Amino acid sequence: MKKLAFLVLLLSSLTATADMASIVKAQIVLGQVSQVVDKYKEVQALLDNGTITLDYDEPIDNNTGKFLLPFDAGGNPTAWADKALNAQIGALAAEKATDSAINAAVAKVPFGGFMAGAAKSKAKGAGAIVAIGGWDFIKENSSLSFDNLDDYSIYMHEEFNGLAGYEQALAAAMAVYPKLEKSHKRSIDKAYRDAKKRARKLEKG
Image 1 (tube, rainbow, N blue to C red):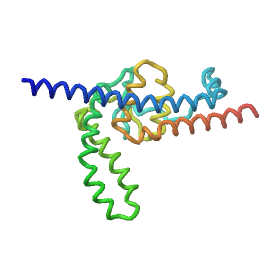
Image 2: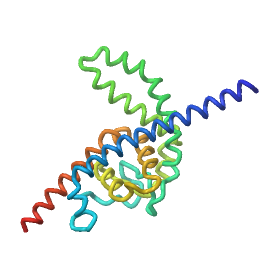
Image 3: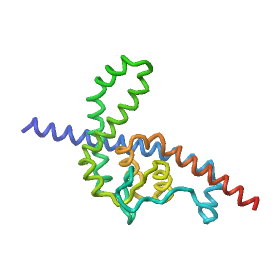
Image 4: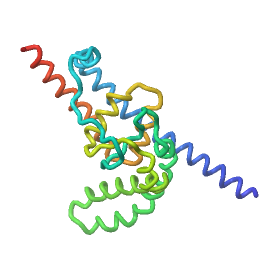
């Protein structure tokens, strides 16, 4: 009984640590996005008064896109988004299990370090997906999707940035799509840069 209680306590501790790690990553990314918004204050003012909008394709109104949104059509976090934070444990386990195999393989390949990074990223995503309940569960609990990760990021920012639950939803999305951690800020920065160019054209008439 003592051993079982210890295991339960250990698992609970791991879950809390994994959840916090996911949230911290999301906080870092959102901090980077805040810097982007600060850099384009004049653009944000034009966005706020409706003079211009950020350019992105609207979400697909079903789950057939490559990237599934962690919000439903009503703006509520999906069931898989709620589960995804705990899924970081699965992601970390997958990464640990594959590290040795990946390192052994890339050691024989020139410039194999680049391959190692990509393989580990895939391992994290795969581990999170398994821990959530698999792609079937994620798809069944998704009602909006995108085929383009840039549009995915811009839409998330435009619709949900600053709202309650957005930080957790972004953390969940990054658990399933590890590339999002590096691309999210870059996508939003480009959208603001493009919006600034359109604003200048409007000023010139």
